[in-house]
Length: 96
Image (cartoon, rainbow, N blue to C red):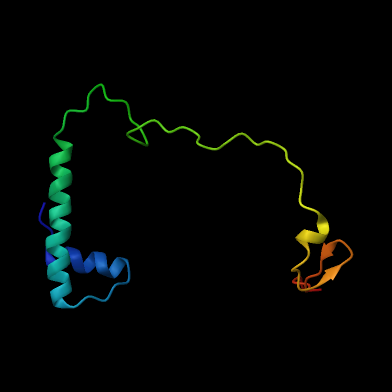
């Protein structure tokens, strides 16, 4: 499917792109090529093929969550810029 210059200019207007004449011509060729490739793909017989989001099965690769002892509070807060007892002290970010 070949796109016309007017169609490319209309698409550029819809997405708020300012294109030079050279860019319009280059995009016309590139977009036309992409659409021709999709026309070829539409000719492929896909009867009996289940629709999928991925071509391979996905599986969870996360490890099991195993509880472990926490770091000591003094070590965690050792490099804190401001501290109040066992907490980080931060500047308020909410308006009153």
